[in-house]
Length: 77
Image (cartoon, rainbow, N blue to C red; front, side):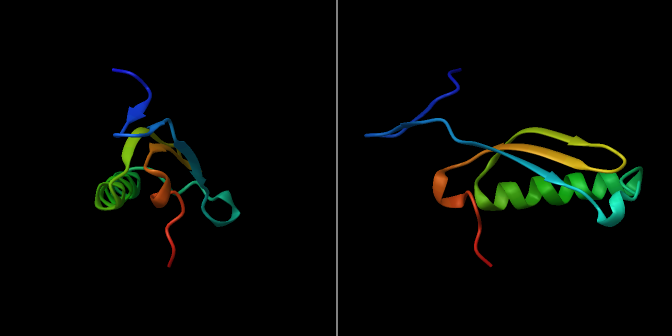
């Protein structure tokens, strides 16, 4: 599978790297909290029509690499 996406008149490759860090970088993202954060990120991405390319949840940060159509890059509101 190619890393490029195609529509009728467009070829594009658009990925966004998001990093979320808890306040004061507290090490709280473990166990049940990490599982719930992962579920929420995947559910929201599916709802917005984004593809989760990579999701890495560590104890003090969450890293997300997603591929999406450019209109969903920065949701408003």
